[in-house]
Amino acid sequence: MARPEDSAWAVSVAQVASRPGQSSPVDADFPAPSGIGDTIVGVTEGEPIHVNGAFDSIIDGLVFHAHITAPVHAECTRCLKPLQHDWGTDVTAFFPYSYKEDETDDDTDIIAGEEESEDTYPLSPDGCFADLEALLRDTFAESLPLQPLCQPDCKGLCPQCGINLNEHPEHKHDTTDIRFAALAGLKEQLERETKDR
Image 1 (cartoon, one colour):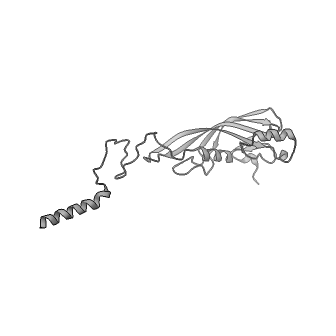
Image 2 (image 1 turned 60 degrees about the horizontal axis):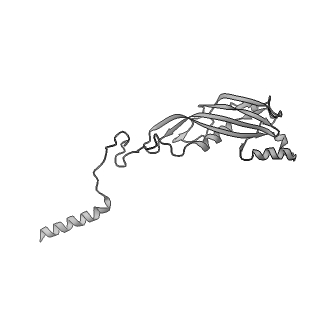
Image 3 (image 1 turned 90 degrees about the vertical axis):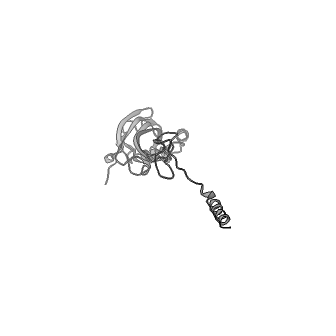
């Protein structure tokens, strides 16, 4: 049976658990879990994600505040240029003490209510470890750009030949609007008929 501490994303919180007012810093790299994004934009599984933050102990659990940075691979949705850069985001999450979930103490309810808007994740059964795998996956799945661009004014690709218009801004094709193709054909037919008379 797997132990919580054997997880690559486990952080020991035993020194602050159940001791309100205590804080435990986290400044480490964790492997990117699977399932963050896709081939267009995402984080490759196993790449290092840097977490810099702290667990703060309150009466009914641990509040985790951190800045998380991951190496994001992406593809410009206009010109298809590969992009590779670090993407950082701030996160706040709540790790409640499971053995206090059923308590009805008014003070506990008030404190728990303050954290209702935050993402909630479980601690290990003994309350000694917090596992960051789901938090990392959720954080980047929600914060990655849906339509990444290499630059805000990317001109994209030529719809006729696919050339990158950022590198060849003067590129163009002399094309006839297909909406007038039928009229052009009728004109040619009328001109032929006039000549034949």
